[in-house]
Length: 458
Length: 106
Image (cartoon, rainbow over all chains, first blue to last red; front, side):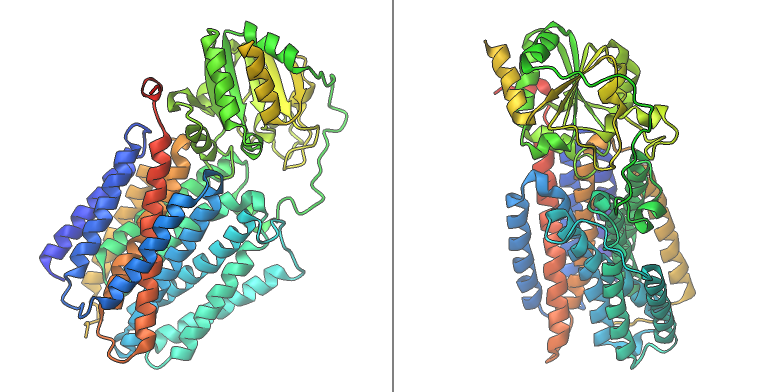
């Protein structure tokens, strides 16, 4: 590889790094994404000048097909469908890495030494698992596949045997890669099957963790492919993405109070999980009408809104922003307190609110709002449940004990907007609803918010 | 034909690069606020489309009459391009919506 290409690769790696760095603030994030895309453009363009490229026709065909599909999907996808789209793209990335490694072996099997063979196996296995695993995640998130964890007897044993077969195949292939296409194809099949089996036992609510983990895998697959074709930019960039995916997965697991092992192997929510707070529930539910809630809100000088995915399900983001504007015009200080895993993927709620034109300086993280919760006059909880449950702090027997939550109960008054008294996805009784300072405002989130807005307009 | 054989120096250098990149990745991502985690995921997903570089080399190689080789190459380019183009565009679409308060009023 020529020195010019190498220098260009270093430059694009720097752009990726600065791009990710600029993502640490919403003010610079867009610029960061642009820098990163320029880095990608440079890497691809200098690669096109490589002397090993003999014809461009197939490259152009592939780029046109992929470019049109990618651009269309990116324009048309709804913001609420972001999780399944990320899952799908992710799977494509993994499959692309796999195909590159496959093509290398297919074209020149005789020049594959043991190191390349091991890298090829890793690329094919990780890429294959990423592909089928992402497809299942996509299916579960978009409702095309049943979101419930699918468990069958002996599942762990089957998985173990498959892994064993994969390792055996990998060893056989690595020792003698030349003329071993059947073993290679066998490994490919095993990887695809394993990707499916690894994801089907995981419940739909845990899919965000899975996407993040698979995102990490797609980076690692690209990295392994980089070792196969000895390309530094693939190694560097793949490793960056691999590391970032793992960090994100950890952050998410922490926010959901689960260990990664627990997410991957437990089949959470597969039944038997309806934990009631036995006898500890004191106090009673105090329902209020929209008029009563309006009087409370009108008198408040500081309001914290805690949105959950219920808000997005009811398509109530715009009504919510309208209410926030009315509250501000009424002289109140309004903040949106957002739990790290609110929405269908981490940070999803922020995107949905930004789409509804809520300025990002009103979006406050859990760690910022909790210390000042006592100074909040009214905390308005909309369509959120488990992330505001004080049981996480108070009740050691609760399955969510220890989970970081927004401490809504510490506000002077709490208004909980909720469709009904049904428990959250974890099936846990919410102690917040029974607190002395809590008022329940039942009904559809959008209709209730609109009722409050029209109260303000009168 | 590409020379595939590798010497230990190259391999250890590549691992050196790999380890530094992993460390850098950890450092960078822990600084991103949870507010931006969704764009971060779709953005880093776009970056993992770097496989496109390898795909371009695979599709542009001398395949002669080998249809399987061509199919593998074109497939890899198309899939990686979806990942890259779609990923960057959708991330941009999301980040465009994040606005500060004073700029919001038209």
